[in-house]
Amino acid sequence: MGKLVVSLDGVVIKEVQITKDKTTLGRRPYNDIVIDNLAVSGEHAVLQMVGNDVFIEDLNSTNGTYINGKAIKKQLLADNDTVEIGKYKIKYLTNDGGDYEKTMILKHGQSPSQLGGLASGFGGLGAAAIGPASIKVLTGAAAGREVALTKVVTTLGKPGVQVASITKRPTGYVFAHVEGAQRPSVNGIPLTGESIALRSGDLIELAGTQMQFIQG
Image 1 (cartoon, rainbow, N blue to C red):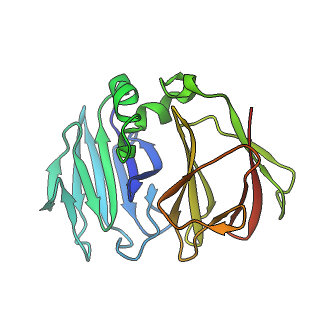
Image 2 (image 1 turned 90 degrees about the horizontal axis):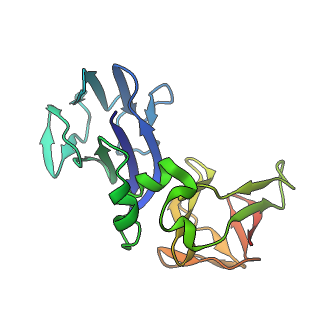
Image 3 (image 1 turned 135 degrees about the horizontal axis):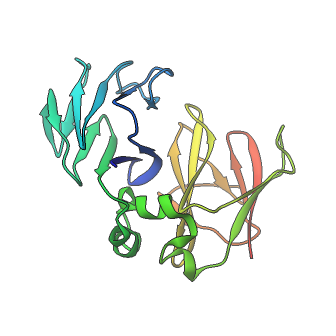
């Protein structure tokens, strides 16, 4: 069964299992895979499953669809192919790939291959190295809610406004900016680099909501 790992600037933002004969991809909310970005057409591409094969077809999009750097109209996807749409990269994988989990998660900047960890939660090599953690919401409608960070990558925020991710690594938890003109802040300081290591008790402000990172 094939699956897709969608990433932006090296940060995994979603993982999708291909289960239907046709899976649509585009900016409009009715698509199966929604990528809310102006570089993506309303109806950008469609994935068609024929037996065990998956084809991707560009739907005359404005900016085109690329596989491994080459523009395509319709093409059969192979394991490990990278589909590029705007700044987004979509990795196609045909198995759960335990090897990805053990080797790729440990390499900085290889987060599109964190799919193994996304699929199996605490089962990964990195997951066993550090203790559990959670995010507690301090303000807003969800104040008091606590969200356990059970996946390798957890995304937070409001799509189209401000989105960030918390990635579980063998050395600890890392907070990164994913989407939005304004950058989130940690302990009152806006994030300046790509990511920052989190410590228990850190205060995060994201999309107008304050939350606290709790570990242990």
